[in-house]
Length: 142
Image: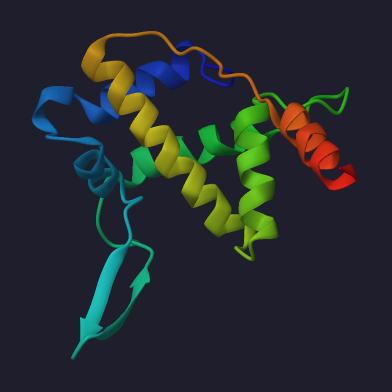
C-alpha cells in the first residue's frame, strides 16, 4: 500500500497483535479508537469521536497513514488517488477535514483487517471517475 513501509507495517502489527482476537473490522476499529461512540437518552443523541478509549498509539499510526494516503506528491499527483477522491468527496459533503480523515482511517482499518485476516496483499483499485463523468455529459447532451 502506498505510504506503508517496513516501520509502519511493524507498528501496525505490533499494536494490533494477533488479528484472530478481533471478530470483525468493527471490533478492531473500536480497539483503535476510530469507531464513534453513541451518547443518547430518550431516543435522542449523537455520535462523538472516541477519545478516551482505544489504543492511542495505533490511532496515531492510522492517523499518519491516512495523511500519507491523501498526500500530494511534488508533481501534484495524489499518492493514492482512490483515498484522495474519497477525502475530497467527504469534504464537499460538508465534513471537516478531520472528520474526513477519520472516515479514511475507518476504511484503512477495514482494509488492514481484511489483509491480515486473509493474508493477502493490497491491490490499488483504479478510479473510473472520468469515464463516469463523460457518460453523464453524453446523457445531458441527448
